[in-house]
Length: 403
Image 1 (cartoon, rainbow, N blue to C red):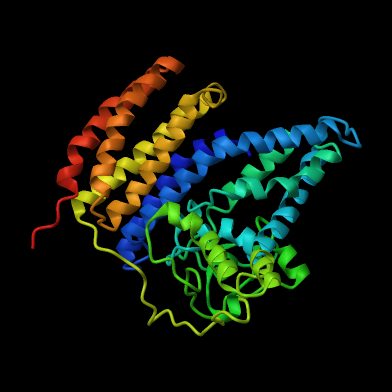
Image 2: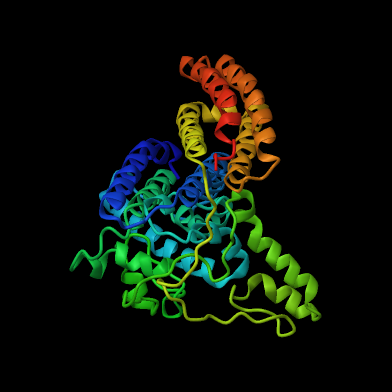
């Protein structure tokens, strides 16, 4: 996908999220909880960071398949873009559907569904490992002669479109909903009400769900999250939890055939000799969401840190090709993952988190100076003083609130 296009859209996403937060507060809707929203944004930062590394592999695989194409299409025709759009949206439906129906694919996709809230921040709660699972679905487009720009542009358009459907503020949009995916459809998709499970997989078009029998209207208030709550703000664990569950199930079940079935059967399936977890009725009025208290000063500090990480990504993307060939890229990548781990630890008030984050910020001071020298980009010079301010402010921000 076009990482530059997605990164450029991030400031607008943040502004729209802020607008929804203010609207929610003014109307008393309670659509946002700080720790949940920060975790959503942290998952998005991790996804974009890992996407910078894995996206190169995806484009390389697509270009190699395009070189082996069986058809050469005439260039410049609008129909190429229209057919490319239809193919990408159709393939997205099936990738999305199989990501709910095959356990090993669900392990990558589950991150996007773990939030127990539903708001625009959830749209940015993106997976880290699905950059790889997308690739096989898109290669046929290369083999029939569609340039990689057609794929990258349409995938980016699909991601950008799906941002606005993650909201409870917009209830219905009339006849538009018959053809296109809308907030009502996607609320159902994110809900764990038994009648809503595994429904409405569409990206931009909802017609695929109507055609293939997975369409469901919104008929009762939605309860969000996963049927087994993650109960954690740790973004690393969020991306690993289902893999760990599969490993545990494969180890505990007795039959070798079941040890294999664990990986490709439905996430709802469990070996007969292990505990079963059938769907159960849920009530939005009585459900208890996982939450932790966060002092106001820590909220301010974490918000500043996330904004800094988003800004750093936008600044580094123009130098992606140069940095990707350097060990500094992987050092920066590890630094971001370390920071995201610390965000979860600070939200959960883990005793190790403050020391870990202070050590990371010290390392980031040196990294910012190294990247400035490598890219000769004066804008990166702001990284060092920002890190210094965050480092000095963290001990006070993480102090327990006065009783």
